Image 1: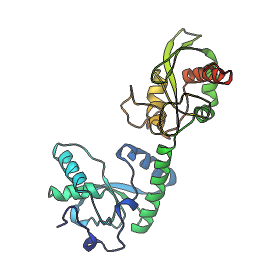
Image 2: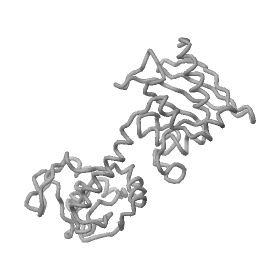
Image 3: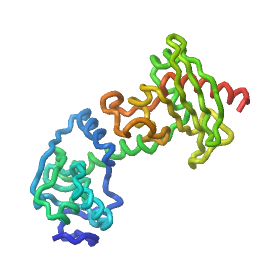
Image 4: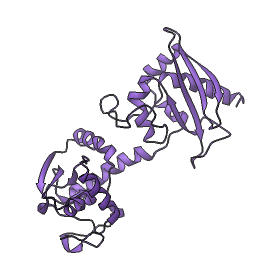
Length: 272
């Protein structure tokens, strides 16, 4: 039986792969994997398999992580399936696999890609890079503005934004009012440096953290922007908006657009 914390070269049929070189997609991004697989037309299936059929390819493992996952399983937590190739090699999920072995489980849930090991590994690596790139790409306020659909920009003309204050945390806190119905919302723009600290000399090419209390931001944008460090999870459950914004697009709601206009105007006039 596999011993946690040691090399598993004796279990590997093909080349060993170091843990740091294995492609990984976070559990929060599992739905994005499914969306991309469907988009590019790659077959896959969800299956429960005898654990003895599964073949690991990762040469090392983190003992503490395996123990943590084992504890989660024992507490009844539902985990994402491991990713395997059509010929049963693990592409992602070695620690979950080891936790099942640790608990003497006979079956394990799998997401099986319709390609053999090498092709599945290459495909999954490409997809993980695409997903992780979108996650790690921080956004400037100008980029978020440029990525906002034209129809939302048109709606922002019905919104007035007033800067209430600049908080100690560096947030430009706005109250917005929709002219046609009088509804008001609160939103903020917080300029940041590349290192993640407060920016005391803001400009439109700054990285930013933005947020709004409107429903459009809650259901469409809070999580997608959080993935690029451009927002914070405040009102949503943090899950990907697979119905409202399945492609995880990053842009501004109409209230933040109105605030953006005032924010940029003050920067260009030297009023900040």
